[in-house]
Amino acid sequence: MVCELDDNRMWRELRNQTLLLALITPFKTDGGDAALRTTFYKPSESPVSIVTDIRNIISSVGRVEMQGKCGLIDRAVKQVRPTFAVGEIDESDESDDEF
Image (spheres, rainbow, N blue to C red):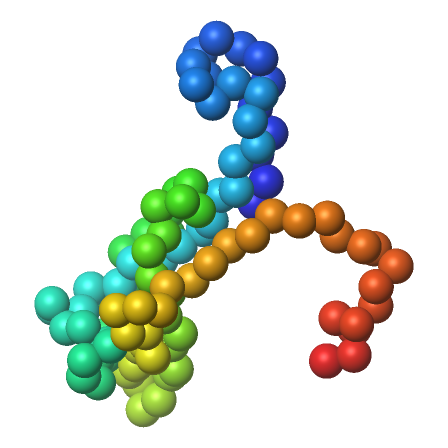
């Protein structure tokens, strides 16, 4: 989500800035680290989703549902982290429609 802040003083150092916000759902894994071992959680135990500044995200994982459980897929190693870049979007580029 894109959040464009105005010149209001309440935003302090963020005045006139554009923030990128992400809707995320943290999952209870009982301390399991999906980068190190197979980690599951029950969908019914998932807490409420939250919105956060994208700069707060340090890692991302995928999930797969199987046999009533959800497994987390994390192929990250210490040197690999998601990168988010802001750039111009050429709306005439239809390459995304080819998938």
